[in-house]
Image (cartoon, rainbow, N blue to C red):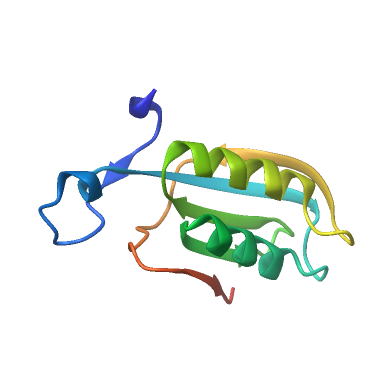
Length: 111
């Protein structure tokens, strides 16, 4: 299953626990812009201890890049599939990651 998700070194540490942390990327569609979706995702990721980014895209979707243990990535995916109250998530699609995610923190990026 680990082969399904690209892994990259997350730091210069030689600690084997830190060397291969799974990375997932999602494209979230529906009414997900202008409803607090990025803030909601950032808060959920921080509570789960996930590193990464969330960003609005011009096509109306939101892209999420997340790095963490598979179990917590599954939790994040379920959480963003629900979205905040004002959102209407139509789909959460796993996509090929388009950026590297550093090991520290989760942040909201501007488009």
